[in-house]
Image 1: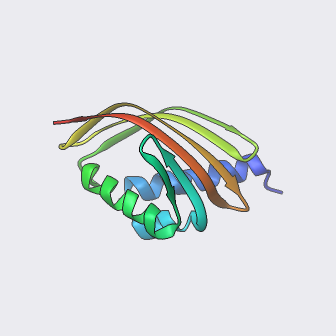
Image 2: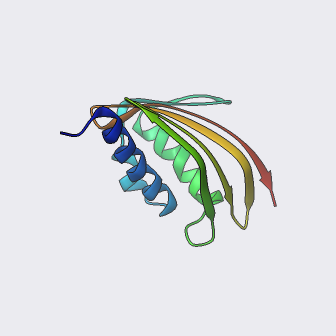
Image 3: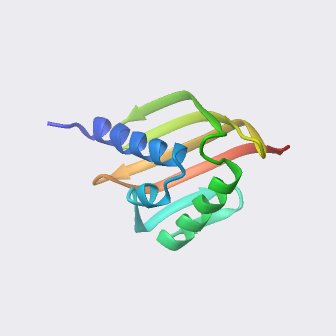
Length: 119
């Protein structure tokens, strides 16, 4: 039987693979209409708003020319915490952190904060 922690880690790995592949369709399978992504600029709620957020992120971190590295991953029960970095032809992200709350196989809440430097 899959524990909640293993399930949360599996959902996060799916999210990460879709992010690295710039695959919006796959990425959005992890969210619901009630999902929220909290950023320093405010809350992003619902599938359309979350899809717009990631669509823009994909323009800055294009597939094939972006290096994304997970520096730390901690998972406990239904929560995942990561620290990551990224580098693309357009931007450098020397520090970023995200937290996820995953319930019933879906990301219901995510927070993100990052330092982004234009090139």
